[in-house]
Amino acid sequence: MNTTKEKIESSFWELLKYCEKEQFKGYDPYDGLNSRLFQKLPFIPKIRICRLAWIQFFKRCPINFRTWVGIEPEYNPKALGLFLSAYSIMYKRDRNPQHLEKIKFFIHHLDQLESKGYSGACWGYHFDWESRAFFQPKFTPTIVASSFIANAFLDAYEATGDEKCLAKARSTCDFIQKDLNRTVFNENEFAFSYSPLDHSIVYNASLLGARLMARVYAHTGEKELLKDAYGVVNYCCNQQKADGSWSYGTLPFHQWIDNFHTGYNLECLADYGKYSGDQRFQSNLEKGFEYYIHHFFTEEGIAKYYNNSTYPIDIHAPAQLMITLEKLGKTDQHRELLDKVLSWTIDHMKDKKGYFYYQIGKRYRSKIPYMRWSQAWMLLTFVKYLDYTTNGGDCFNPKTVQA
Image (tube, rainbow, N blue to C red; front, side, top):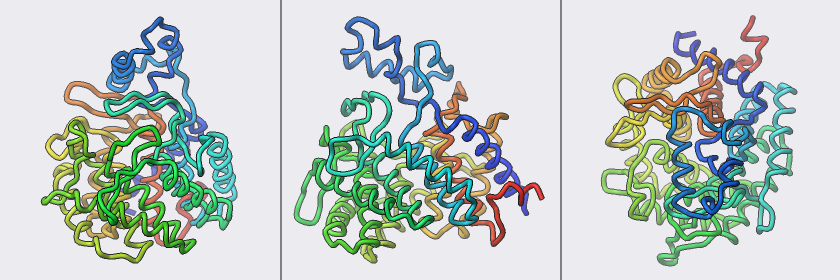
């Protein structure tokens, strides 16, 4: 076993222990409006700019003031979905009944947190969310949260054979197709909105919906799912820049190009091709990957946030690399870079308690242990890494490791 893999394996067990100790509850970068203090202030909570400023303060501040203002650690539906995916991979590998119990635990809580009153199964975040583009009340379902969670149900279905998990993912397609707004450009190109309450176009969000429909199609054979998936993929690929990159979205203040959303786009295109059998967008995928791999990682192993700026160094960026490489079948080809990035991340962003920090800025370091943004993503990445690099054996059984 090489040194890097030993470091990753040790970090995996420490992180797993931390997440289980915390019972998978935690804070979130955007949970500021859950503050009991803020909600009690006169008039202020009704003013948009005040809501936006309050959220941004808690997102950017390296000191965690949440307990002082009445913000509690809670279950985040998307975090539970990521954990469900991780434990499904582990259970598929080792058939450990303890991992199966955790799968049932996540499914139970996701059922409890499902947003009601929509055409299909869907989820939002456990906090009011004010952004520059729109305001989302607590638990307003979004295509991003819903598609990640539905994909986790498919991971659970493929690990356990539980037909209810497949039915849940299929139900999410109803939410996407019936409840989200569409911006139609022609009969072969359209985009989904981020939520039922807005009409914004975010490329990774639409592609996440298309990926889910293509994956469900692979199980059900429903042509209408494939038709809609194609329309979204066709549009988003036509919006790809000549150098292979994508901006975040179409609004004037969505014109940045970042690491992990580019990774989302690539994994969605790869999965669309895999599950649909449609290889017409392979050149877009390859061009996008070349941009991604050459613009977002430094020689020393730092995963940059933006294409033109290293800072802030955000934990989500290194976590996405393993996922992107695996989806595109390029892990072996870029294993040296992957090991370097994960090793640097462990050395510089891991706390002695086992969890991972949120960000490193030029003049600050945010060590707040966000459960969704940091821990869930890193655990999923470690699981995928160990599953890929371990030939045979029971890599997720602590007795095997101790032996």
